[in-house]
Image 1 (tube, rainbow, N blue to C red):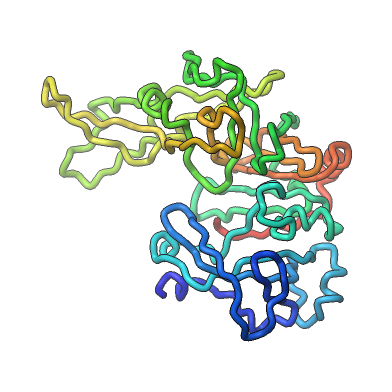
Image 2 (tube, rainbow, N blue to C red):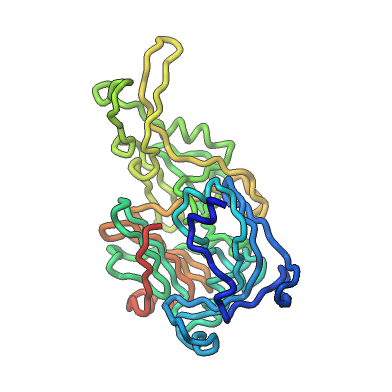
Length: 359
């Protein structure tokens, strides 16, 4: 399949540490029939098989599994090996696999939870972070085991995760403002948002998408509009617009500006009444269906993409999320450890491994 041939593949036959499993974790004899799983991913699908494997964040090639697992950055985890995948969208993706970083309660089994296994087996602090570069020419970064303090430029502010038993990095949101207008989405007090590194869009409950689009749409001034037959490109990220402010309570507000929420390409529209053509800048919003697993009022759950303005730090064991301003570029940091231990590790910035690779 073209989608598979475009990626570096995991070869089970080359691994002495891999153990073939069925979906329930039972060991499968070699060359026998085994369970398969089909996983929907966006508009595509992956079919794969189950294994237990030793995973290390550094290269210990040549060491046996027992020796490798003594290193502080090695752990044992269940994985799904992709055997088939649809061309759309995987043929366009540069990454070779997906590392799930949700809370353990979202996993099919605790052994599938990379970070749950890290807290049990590894000597690293259960902290991870995702730095998203503003430009493609710059490398993005995943930090595992600590915080890169070179990226921190302000005081840390903590917010508890709402309903962690559902497995999402979910926050209670007191109110949402667009410019000076408060959106009635959170009037009943049961509004939540999920921090999601898997999207670059803001997920909005379907019933509120149209209103949010109207509040965030901006008309481009005539003098800035390139001719229709021109190859010139107007970048809406440079068009001023109202801020979106998420009030998480206790004085903590997250502000997302037009540069961050705008679709780069403008939309040409023709006014019915006058027949005049206008250029409109729109927000990158994603309609969100009801998700029963995240609470009793699922229609009021939003999804937040990792934006460039903030450094996000997630605590895994006692379940807190921290926000602070970043230095120079954008950071999204997830942490997992006991609260006092996390604060100490954050202050020291010790024991962190960075994978420098465009995401």
